[in-house]
Amino acid sequence: MSENVGRWLRDEIENSILSNEFSPGERLDETVLATRFGVSRTPVREALMQLDAIGLIEIRPRRGAIVIDPGPHRVYEMFEVMAELEGLAGSLAARRLDKASREAITATHARCEQSAAAGDSDAYYYDNEEFHKAIYAAGRSDFLEEQCLQLHRRLRPYRRLQLRVRNRLSTSFLEHCAIVDAIFAGDGDEARRLLRGHVGIQGERFSDLVASMAAR
Image (cartoon, rainbow, N blue to C red; front, top):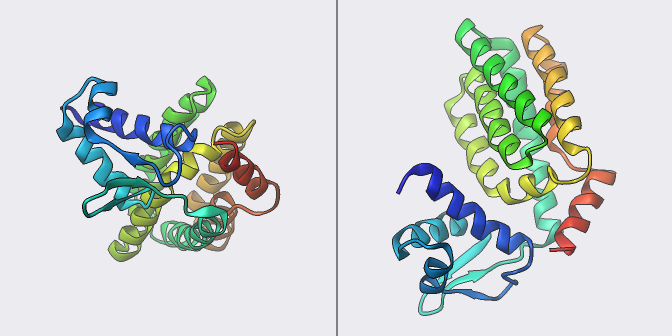
């Protein structure tokens, strides 16, 4: 099975959890899921393992995959830490930017512009993911990059959900523009500030996310 199909299957199961079609505490049966999505049990098992790794489900002995609800407070804490890590990554990228990193950030930023213009929140999420990865790589800190990627994966369901909030797509891209300008200008302090604000969820943005989670 191709990587794109595997990602599609994982996202479909994830979407069903986020829409509350699969409720917290519910057991996800591999055979039922395989029949529903027209695939074998192997890719279903792989998708469930990925969702277990980010804490959206929990694979328990003799019970199988159980849907987990981390609650808004836990999600907020993860975003809070992610904002600090992203800020540091942006600061290092501004200080250590080279030609290859500049080109990678420029290319991923352009793809974000295309998906934002198309209004495709899922496509934008994955383009946005590559944009942030380019910033991590530009900072040239392997350990920080590993930590950012790990937490980025854990927050994937909620970042995708947040992008569906009205006007968030266009706002996110405008924030990207300012971040790129700061990094390319070598302004580490400004890049840190902008990325912290871009990833952090306070005030109305957190209220919107909580409302979206409650409406699942």
